[in-house]
Image (cartoon, rainbow, N blue to C red):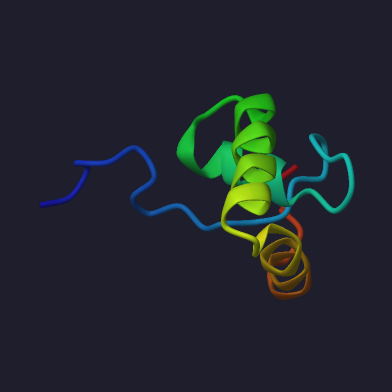
Length: 70
């Protein structure tokens, strides 16, 4: 079934226009259609309570490409 989720058929990119450090949270927010502030708060909470937020951010910043459509 296609079209079930709003992010189907999209690619995850680093955001060029909504970035604070590398654009990871802005890109995730664009991908899922969320507010980037909410994604940033969730990312910090994930980093505090799960312990892998900084490492995951660095890996995402290195692996994701910048959005060519912005």
